[in-house]
Length: 403
Ligand SMILES: O=C(O)C(=O)C[C@H](O)[C@H](O)CO
Ligand SMILES: [Mg+2]
Image (cartoon, rainbow, N blue to C red; front, side, top):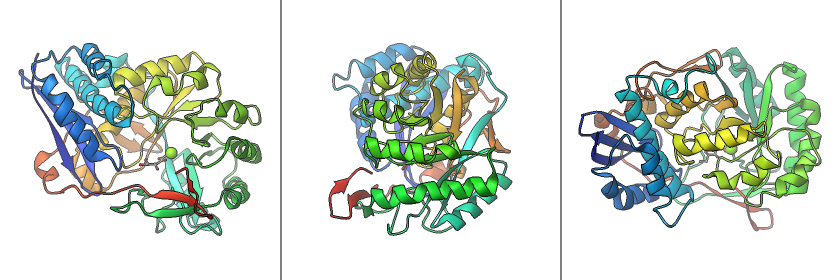
């Protein structure tokens, strides 16, 4: 089965998405998500200019060889743009292989390890009270796990909190990066109060997650981890920028709060020390940014040796294609932890018809051959790309800080 045609589809039904479609000479096609929030066109250029021309004529069933060709052969290895391009190719080829085998992707990976996939919702609010009502609303929808993010007194705008109650949080909100202001002190003072209030109102069965978004120093993250121990979080996410993997050792030595890292990582090498030393508990790299199923499966298997579980990144800035493939992966992977769920807009779901279902706080995987997600190219053409950038973040004295 040869690759006869491959092309990128850029569409913006609610926000920008990049999809790669690969068509074989037997008429079977597969699609992959190549969306990299705020850098979409970089991945399009990488695919159109440097990947697609080399794919034409290759054996579509040779997934591993194509992965190695695009990874080792790139010379300039790794990085979010390269690995998102490889991720989209890999996702499309696994989609093709499962369709050719006439089975849902999770069966091709090794079959079910679970009947359904636990998800967590985003519960955000400008203050603690509005956060509590969002938690109430999501518990009523059946979620067993919620990520809780609130506005911080004295900080005008903060990541992870929707601008208006009940709305989605969309970080890429301006053509040119908006500038946010940050204060670790104000944040560190407020967050333990937020979780005390959530536990007081909802008890101890609900899984609580929180995303620090890389903004603390290791000792500050250790302080926060200790401060929230009484509220036993499911995880504290991205508590420090983790290029320096050693940072996690210091935090680990101070707190038993579980740690999740890696939505901005794109290869096994980004994690190796952290996993080997059991400094983290969950890996976050999504299939798109992690080089696809072929590579993320390796990361998950390596993580399993050290009791580390998966917790895929699943924001609205990954398309339903990535989410659909992730739900198949989540249904198979033995060391599954949890799947992030930021529901896409209806407009997005119209462009990306899919057979996964959300029910009672969980995803149920579909049985259609492949990953069960398609793209309506006619509908996609109605939504032209519009540049949207993630903000930058500064301390109160103007210092450019982690985002
Ligand atoms: O969903 C999360 O955990 C995030 O951190 C969301 C990110 O800000 C978003 O995906 C960046 O594009
Ligand atoms: Mg995050």
